[in-house]
Length: 446
Ligand SMILES: [Zn+2]
Image 1 (cartoon, rainbow, N blue to C red):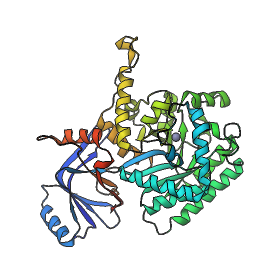
Image 2 (cartoon, rainbow, N blue to C red):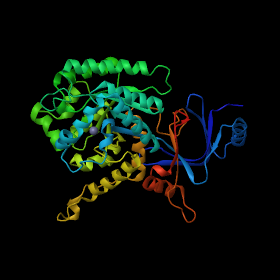
Image 3 (cartoon, rainbow, N blue to C red):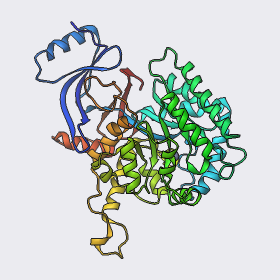
Image 4 (cartoon, rainbow, N blue to C red):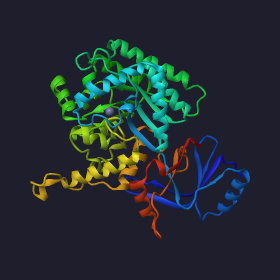
């Protein structure tokens, strides 16, 4: 008799590749003590009933109801944790104004531990409730707040990647909210790495510290060079924004005479552990550079509508095997749900495909073959995110970590429905209320 920690009985969907989603009905997903999917037993397998009986006897069987399905947990590649209180605010402002008037004043408040704890605990819980089992976070400049975010991830058993935001360029940052100098920023980043290591002791899901230059405009060359060295020294992930808007794209060209992807690369900040947010204005050369280096893109379709100045050509990137995952970009994006971003990714791609200006003739109005499907978007929210963070999650597969969600359909089906229809409806209609349970590393956290 094999003792599994939990045996989940029911049907599941998991991405096979960017175009295909696999489905199994009434299978057994057997999770071991380490929180890994040790075995998947299909309905027709010889020992199916034996395993069900054993699990029943040991009290480890969890049977999904007929209207429930199992999905991999989602991976959110771009969250500004301290912006959570501003979610849904000031989205009519241009990026530069939005930063100066709304975002920087709020982020500066996170030097106070009590406030940080209040906001971060709520954010982490909210993301989990929405089916997001892993998130890549920008913290703020101050480590007091950043360590509260780490503690919230650990307390809620959420897979977290957290970065101390670096911004030391006096010309592009307010005096009340910036690193004192390049040296101070690098010291604080290194302190953060060590303090996270201490908090991680004896934890099941350790938090990963992330090298986090905010973006090119807010950083000096000295700090970028130092951060590149720290990333190499500690072998850590890197996150930043790249070619997000015309303003940001233009800034790099004006000040450095180069594209921002080129500058980041020259400082050692584009590696196979890098995740760059947005990328709506990346050109062919940048994309080739991302491919060569193994850089992931955080596709933030809601935020891009407000600040991106263009639609990310997700279909093209997926077909060229560039790593692309999904990001909510709280609070450039107004919604903490990856489902909502899946839907916006599909809708935005339709607009890119068809074009939007009725005065242009249909043959010239859009970009052919740019539309993505629900399957493409689901792939980004699961496998694309996992690949970008080099994690063995995002799939229901033997040997993968059991980060999962159990959801049910929002509306009745009024008769039989094929599995493909069920899947599409789930992608389009699921809200937080239909997410019944969430599991990280084999433990139920919702
Ligand atoms: Zn961002």
